Image (cartoon, rainbow, N blue to C red; front, side, top):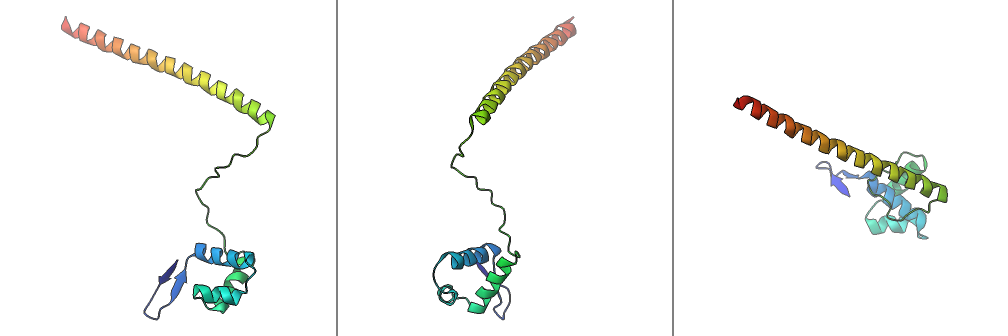
Length: 119
């Protein structure tokens, strides 16, 4: 939230905090002065943050959160996804066969080396 930078008690607020406060002032039907007082901020600071927000100087940092709600998909998207799923399943099966064959081949070569070194 806030970080004290020096002896003179200069406080630096995080960008995320500033954005949340500005959005709070925009959403609520309460005067900015009252919100500033409730948060322990000077009203001028809050007005400046609001102006900077309007000018686009505050950009919300990208979040790594994902939406847990499923977007409705169209039938054509579902068909494409089903086709892609089948293709990927076939590819996985083919790669498993190839991997098994290579493991068997490796074992065969190992056995041949051991048998060859015994003579």
